[in-house]
Length: 397
Ligand code: C5P
Image 1: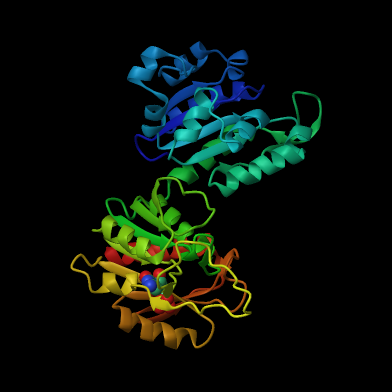
Image 2: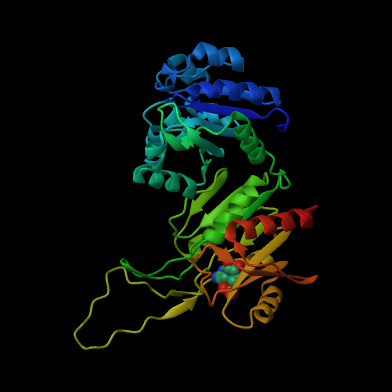
């Protein structure tokens, strides 16, 4: 069964598989869920609003240009009331428009505006599914956090055979259940996460930076949001999509990051994953520094940045659980233990970054707390995040 009073916003694209969306509505309702349908212009050639309204017992939304609905139930409101947005069938065209960030009808506008998790269920001709454009669009959507189901394989309405068929409605219901059953162990908690590098300007065109990709911090923010927390993510300069349901504040320098963290307090849990630059350039030049032909360059004077983690450790509004990260290349655990004491953190999560961790997809971490050291096996950064968030929930319980 679906969690009680689950609300699904079902976006129906224009493909022959649209008729199966009608069956999906019945299954979701039988499972205890409520369904509101958004029908694209293409979808309306395959199923009628009347069919969908009768099955869902809710009004069906078809156009962006409906004055009455924009007052009562605008495109923003539609997704705000949903727990999950399901795009079914997700046609090649609809996914292309989603990937391009277009908003030229009600469906794409709400998909661009939503901060809710999105599950796309593709259905199309096998050649369209395997076309390089669709492959790239699916990869883009997945990288942005949209969950795209694999289509089923078999005979198609067009007479061809291969992957591209809409998965059976029962399999789609299973995917919906899996999405909604993440236990809301951090409901009502505010989790603050820092992620990415900082950029410390030398002059208007140059800066000091580091190799942090932000992936582990973003994965932690995503996992905390999935667990029901209100999440504030203070991100240094990275080109990563904002995880669904996360409030993101972009900053550039360590000083700005410190201000954004202070402004986000109070929080229950702070997880400081950012690779904050230890130093900034004293008196960064307002003009571009030039060579003077002497073969020598005036040295840069560096001054220490404020330590955001240590600041929180001593703050009046100290979070109940304060977690730092320690990227080390040698004596990983010893250095992390010392860091835990020095910064007043509850846990330090240590990782050895001498290999391919920075920018890579996997991580091996050791959690150092008052209770000792626990080492997790090498895992995808998303799985490391899920494991850490489960431990955070245990610690707060
Ligand atoms: O001292 P070190 O940079 O190795 O410590 C790493 C931990 O401290 C991370 O959690 C990082 O986010 C945090 N840190 C900070 N402010 C700094 C330097 C590091 O919050 N200026």
